[in-house]
View (cartoon, rainbow, N blue to C red):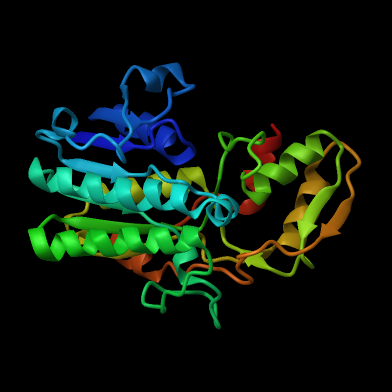
Length: 297
């Protein structure tokens, strides 16, 4: 099969490139050069929000996996126009080109941020969407466009909603990096772990290997077409619990400090993964403790 993977220089996209390149033809699209040489040789420098004709990349393609996105809630609040250009305009342009050049399947990487603050957890795919931030709103908009292209043009689409992805490749230097990346980086430097709010907020932390495996299962399961899948572990951990786990694993003496809650932050989040378990035979393999231990090794 032939895969086109957007966001090929990013955290998820780079792992997807490595995974599918083992057995398939892959082309990566990103607006920045990949820092990984083995991936860079398969990648093209393309801004999908600005280049209107993507024909040279999309002819005779079996799967487009759209992982490119502006992924920071905080940045989306500071610059909602930048967020919309990347997450909405880029998605619509890619969908339109995928239809025009007869891509067989389109997989949209969404986000658990579309759910907003749920009243009950775990959250299944049918739970009402009510995003709290421009980021969550733009990701939901991308989903709606994917579904609209399926209805209006017959483009076969699948949507995956990852919860909180973590991996070695998350950038600790970015001010918008996720909480695990920040905590690990601070622990390695013997700096206090800053918890924004009281620490009772919960997240479903899913290791990158489980996300890639789910996407592979979808790509090899024709019945996944038209579906939305949560991608998580089905287990919630509080930010305070996360901090304590990292302190227990750190070789350095590390403390905790608290700051004000982050605007647009979700209080409770945990995935119901029953649909993926039943349709894809998916089950998470990496528990949080082992995943964190890997980041320290």
